[in-house]
Image 1 (cartoon, rainbow, N blue to C red):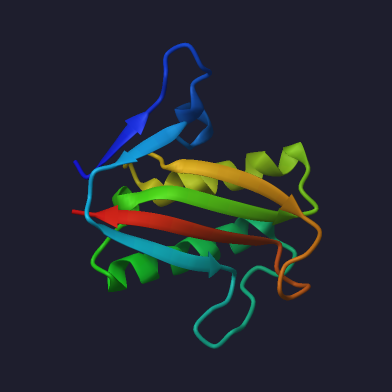
Image 2 (image 1 turned 45 degrees about the vertical axis):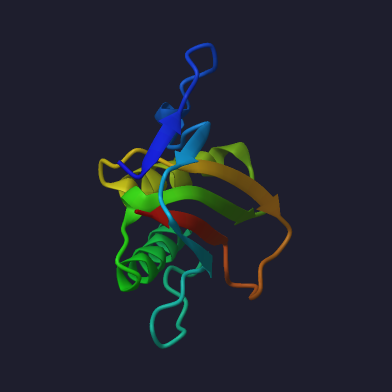
Amino acid sequence: MPNKPINPGQLYNAVEFGFSHAVESRGQRTLHLAGQVAWDPECNVVGADDLAAQTRQALANLKAVLAEAGAGPEHVVRLRTYIVDHKPEKLGVVLPEIGAFYDGATPAANTLIGVAALAMPEFLIEIEATAVLD
């Protein structure tokens, strides 16, 4: 196992929310993935005004980058999720999509950050990652 999740018993159960409190990296190759948005290969926005659809596309883009590097979600140790005009109810839309991204792998550490805007006004979410491989 290249990454060891750290979830202290005296803290709340972060795994229920789709992340770990920390991840010990035991690998030797580190990938720093640029933030991914809801663009398809032709730079068309997938899911205009649909946070769930945009989240799925951003995560699919992350998976594509990971796969190109010979990695998968199980190698991700850190996500940073930027949500435009974040409100707590948006978590109910985003967290299930992030949980599905891991497909049974232990979730990485994740920080959700509310922002005023992203690079293009049609983007509702951007997700970046760090992965470590053996």
